[in-house]
Length: 193
Length: 255
Image (cartoon, rainbow over all chains, first blue to last red; front, top):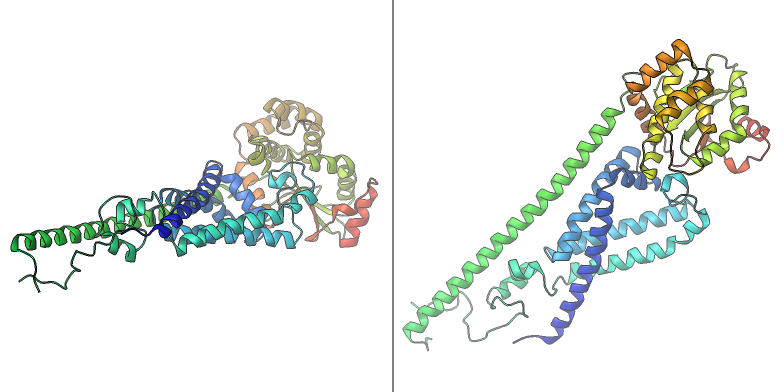
């Protein structure tokens, strides 16, 4: 017996996965091939002490690629969503921090933005924060409800979390909704000896 | 309560067993995948730390120019002539930075006069981050060449010559010909000192020093050029006017 309402939300899960996953994967991939730029960008925020900023600059792009791929393929979706949400929250806080201090990170030689008017750069901050919070919301949604269409979670484990797969283990192997076959006996309750 | 015939009973048990085996396999799959992801994250962390170690190792200055500061974070300009109580002025610049050239054009002469007369203790902290932004290596090569110019005894003039010839098109950078022939001539590096310069430059002997200067600027939280610090305090370039003397005023304010 399928549950139609859950099926609709599974599509929402898929969209959330693909959007958040693609953003992380693309951002990470662009930086992974140019790690020195990533380091400069991290330093430009002037939040972390120098050596930590360098480490984060090197590490962040690689983690973005890993978790971007997890989300896109729908593998370990609950964790992917939670970590993705944390990344987005961190970015939003970082931008808020430079906004409050009046630092323009895209401006001038350092930000790699060439000759950009600092006020123009700062004017973009609220939009960027809103964008990152929106992406964070997608991650939170997936962390709370990781079920989605076309996920490796379902293909490999029968579902994105332990409680789900326990049910799904008794379903057939199609990619469809969880079925509950009420004519099957529950385990351990029937001993035929 | 058994309402099944024995045959169906067996097939029920078989189905159960199959289902439980499938569940166990899935549990195993999940453990493998989690293991792989943890391994990937650990690999990333190890790679990042390795890059960090290599980066800081390369910045150890085994060879440094004669007028390098004690902390190997800059080259002193006309050292030894400073009067008592002269403020320390640190100029952070990148040879490919257009704003730095503008500063140099307007205030370079004044600043060097102040250093020569002992009014200030001047040091140039040359950064190389524009290589990353412009995707070339001109900042590093120019910084190397300038350090070699100090070895050859003509640092300030060479520094000036580089900025004087900064290309209009940001990103064109500097050719080796410019660095080894044109700027040296303009700085008065000839004959024996030119041999010294060439020997230093072609072997890239100052590479470690150049990196150490750049790293030190990073640690000092310099994120924009040009940056001028007087006795460690930031000079607000917005207060500078077209009058070169405004620099003197601003420096003395921070003293």
